Image (cartoon, rainbow over all chains, first blue to last red; front, top):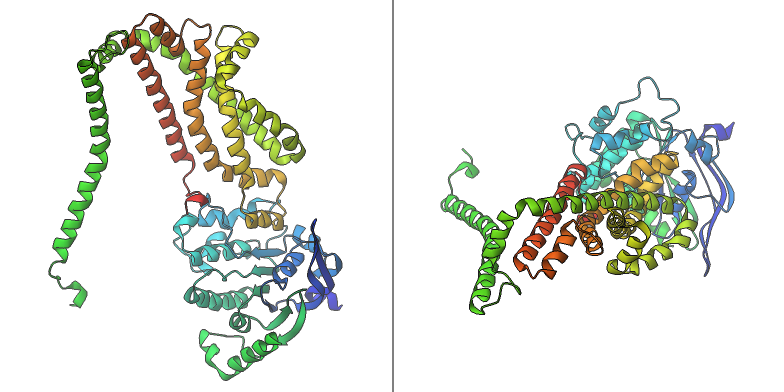
Length: 258
Length: 275
């Protein structure tokens, strides 16, 4: 049962947006699969449809053609099952809620999670996991950009989702904050064993984070290549100075320039 | 001991000077408006005195102050009906606007059908609406309440629709990923998002509701701030006229301050627009 062991099975997915003036093909014939517990980085220039692909997985956009299976179900079933956590580029926190109230939001709407594991972390524990102990009662405008994004990661984890979808979550942050959050995301992935699908346009981020990188090309969005990243699971920022890392990153760059 | 802990020459003095500067700025901010008001009153008194303006054209500020004291019971008993009309109209008009905005946001076709009607009704000036409503609703408080309500309705409707719709698109996607129902999206996202917009409309409505009630009283009314204004005018009692106007505007200011206070209590986060 190949499909059952996959977190995502994407077969020949095409997405077209029809407007009054013209038809835009955002994705053409995209196929890939992601194993459960895996960490796949979607890498490509802007306009390659990587955010669109993530939204097809999350059932926010319906594919024009092709099939998408998420955790052995349709994307809609997976969404209704509350199997997915989504982290947006802008943290998308509700400004009238404190950090902890924002983390609690997924427990309050949509009937709450279908089944939480007995040892599911509480909102307070999740804020601690993302390094925000003591900031529970702060409002979003009192937090820095990096802290807001941490809150949104805690919010995505509160339903113990089987898969985390991340749409350039660190794209708007400064380099230092971004590096630190990259390191922490690897740690969180290892601790929670949640499948992660991560959209980025940074080659270094994709190599550092991903167990595998799916490279997309633009106009129309299509798969260029999928590359496995042979780096050890325990990664610190220092790994970016190793020969292997530099070689892999250079290979991806060369491939993207073609 | 580290370098930072050493007393640096000049720093304490600079800090003290900076603090003194700040304190002076604060005092200035408080005193200047007061000086402006006193200057205005002095200019008014001087003009009336120098130009020998007769009391049936314009009073001196002292005459107005005298009437404010001697006619205080009369002024207050006339303020009461105006206040009731303005507040009732304010409540009715704003509640109607909030309900209509909620319907518009959920049923786009209704918005497309009726928004133009609302815009056209809003282009009719208050002074033109007043006689129509007096004919429709009689001579009691009802037409005044209706005018106050109508005048509040439009700005609140427009702002409320904008507030309910201008939700962060990613927050909207989040609600969808969470399979939130329409009711949950309304109460947990749209309504909260609209509160800063609503309050800026309510602050406008607080002063316009009073204007609406007064204009309503100009037409066939024997009590109220509006009626008193008309009576004082026909009696060439300029001191009473000015005193009445001051009482009316004091009420407006208090109403406005009450809404501002409510806003501070309800909207405790920073609206995105001010970032």
